[in-house]
Length: 111
Image (cartoon, rainbow, N blue to C red):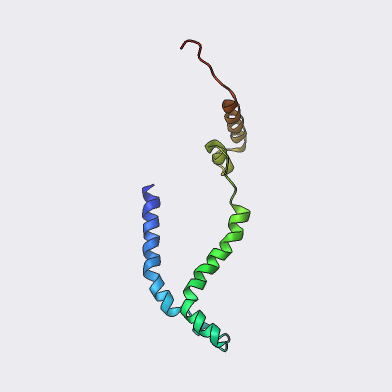
């Protein structure tokens, strides 16, 4: 958990330090053929950095939709099996055991 938190802080720091440079340097100077359009020239020069981040977000939508499995309604054992935490033979046994354990009801008569 500490490694995850440290990595998160590190990348937040990197983004915070690099965005001011990106805002000042990313614009239409790299694309002279677009600069003929005056509206695009002023708009994209001002917001070019945000279009870079928006393009990454837009490209991630199909990846998440097609490649990340849904885990709603699954137990932790089923999620571990889904993401390959065990071999296929063991995963089937774990799923069957989890389903049978949840359907069994144990009563104690000595209480």
